[in-house]
Image (cartoon, rainbow, N blue to C red; front, side):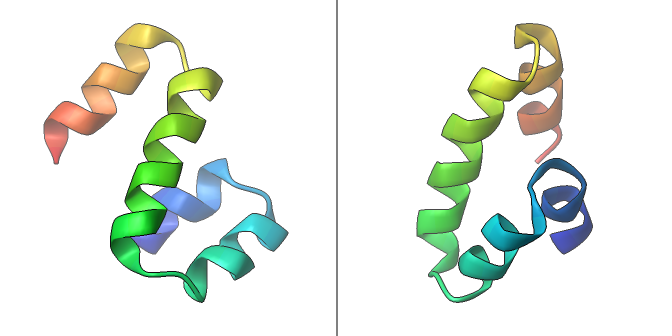
Length: 49
């Protein structure tokens, strides 16, 4: 969902992502969050998918 993205990324980044293919966004978000979040939090988020 978009809410997940909106809560972690600045509005400008979200805006840019809306014009980008989802597969690219997912990779970007994955790398971005890997640095942003503690390791266990990152794993918890991506295991739920």
